[in-house]
Image (cartoon, rainbow, N blue to C red; front, side, top):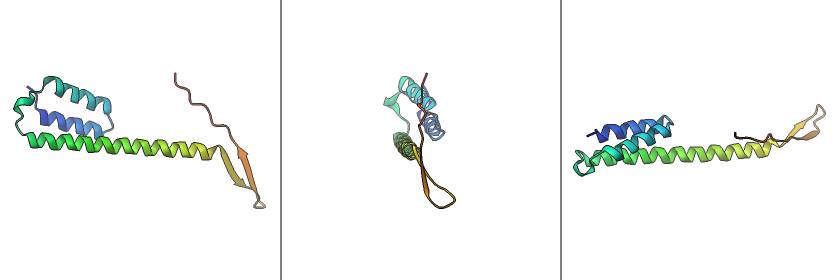
Length: 102
């Protein structure tokens, strides 16, 4: 039998460390090996599960915000407006590089 509370704390730490693969592996281990019928401290386990959910939701929101900011920067970066010495605006269009995944 495994210590469910200890494993949940490890999973929460993995989420906080931005290690989703490690967190998922720990949660799968809990699912496979834990005896849920005889939880020693059900309230503590539920608190840890809530904490993991809150950290996961915050991480997902942060990633979504970062993706939105990158998209906005890419959009703004396609047309760079600069000024010459006389104060006249010079507009230079740029081509964004294609991101390729191999």
